[in-house]
Length: 94
Image 1 (cartoon, rainbow, N blue to C red):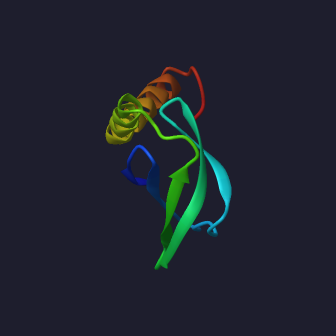
Image 2 (image 1 turned 90 degrees about the horizontal axis):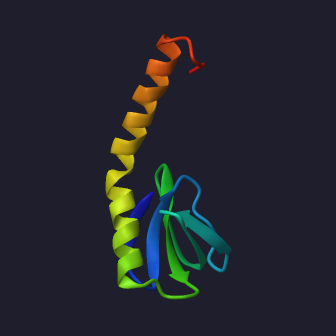
Image 3 (image 1 turned 30 degrees about the vertical axis):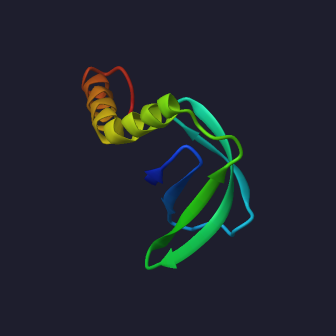
């Protein structure tokens, strides 16, 4: 779960937070972002990772990712509704 985003990094919530020093690709909003885990905080039921991007994002990219995150739940709900409609029509499986 994306918690915070800037041009140089992000905070993400995870069920199993990664160890500092872990290198990864963050795929979101049609962007592949190379990042390093620089911080980890464990909590009850998961934790938070602080990521540092290899290359800074542009302001437009930050806005695109934020829009993607803000509309994620709505897109998921609409996709589920479409899947149920197809199932009711006999066009597929849930």
